[in-house]
Amino acid sequence: MSANGEQNLEKGNQEYAASFTQGHLALPPSHKYAVLTCMDARIDPAAAFGIPLGAAHVIRNAGASARDAFRSIVISQQLLGTTEVLVVKHTGCGMLTFDNETAKGLVKKNKGEAAAKEVEDLDFLTFPDLEAEVKKDVEWLQSRAVEEGIRFTGWVYEVETGKARKVV
Amino acid sequence: MSANGEQNLEKGNQEYAASFTQGHLALPPSHKYAVLTCMDARIDPAAAFGIPLGAAHVIRNAGASARDAFRSIVISQQLLGTTEVLVVKHTGCGMLTFDNETAKGLVKKNKGEAAAKEVEDLDFLTFPDLEAEVKKDVEWLQSRAVEEGIRFTGWVYEVETGKARKVV
Image (tube, rainbow over all chains, first blue to last red; front, side, top):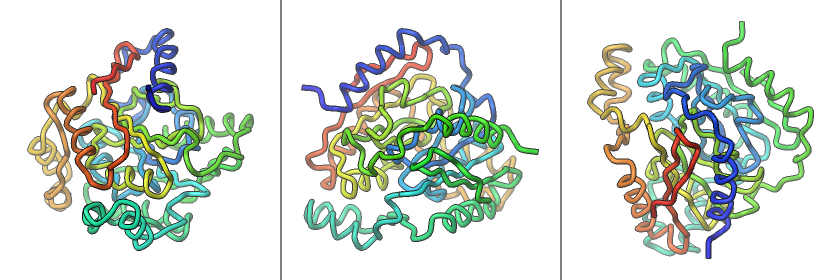
C-alpha cells in the first residue's frame, strides 16, 4: 500500500501535469533571485511570497539556516546568475524549541548507539531568538567574500496570519 | 528601489495574507512525511506534488542532495515525527552540468582569491546521472542507523511535462 506522501504525489501530480503548460521555462531563474526559507509544513513559498514559476530558486532547510544553505546559495549565484537573496524565517519555528543536547539525546534514546554516533558531530543549528537570527544570517552572508555584490534582505513570516514583514 | 524578489514578496504576500485562513495549523506535519527536492525555479512542490498546506516538510537544495539535507531530515523525523521521505530530483538539473573544478574555477575568476578560499573545501555535490543519483541518495539514507523504520521512495520530476515518475 502506498503511504501518505506517495498517494498525495501521485494524485496531485496527475492533476498538475494534466493542465501543465510551462515546459518551456529556462534553467536560470528569470527574476534572478533566491529565497531561503524553512522546511516548515505551514509555508508555501510560491503562494505566500509571490514567486511565479521559473522566477526564483527556493532553498529550504530546518530553520532557514544560511550556513546550511551556503552550497546552494553559491551555486545559485555563481552558476545560475542570481543576485538577490531573501532570508525568510518564521514564527513558531521548531528550531526555537530544542537544542543540540536535546536532539542528540532523543536520537540516542529512540534509535540507539549507532544512530547517536551518526549525529555526534552534527550541529542542529537551532536558535533562541527569531529576529536576531534573521539578522545574524544576513550579516553572515554579507561578510562572505563570495557574496560580494549580492543584495540581501531578511524577513519574518507569521504562520498565524500569513503575513511577511521585513526585518533587515 | 526594491529589487525583483522584494517586490514579488511584498505584492504576493499582501494578496496571500488578505485571504489567509490557515493560522490554526500545527507545527508537526499533519501527513507525517517530508519531500526532498531541488531548489530549481521550475519546481513548485505544493502544486506539482500535491502537498496540502501543513501536511509535509519540504526540504530544497541544489540537486536535492540527501547528504546536504541530512540535518533537516533527522530533525523532521526525530523532533517532528515524520516517517516517510520522498526524494524528488528532476530533468534538466543544473547539477548535471558542471563539477567541483568548474565551480571553484568560476568563483576564483569572478570573485577572487578570498572567495575561492571560502569554497575551497566545499563539495558542490554535482552528479552525472539523474536516475542513478536518485537511487544512490535513497540507498544512502536507507543505510543510516538513524533512518531505521523510515519509508523512502525516489522520483524524477520532468520540468518539460510537469510529470513525476517513481524510480525506486
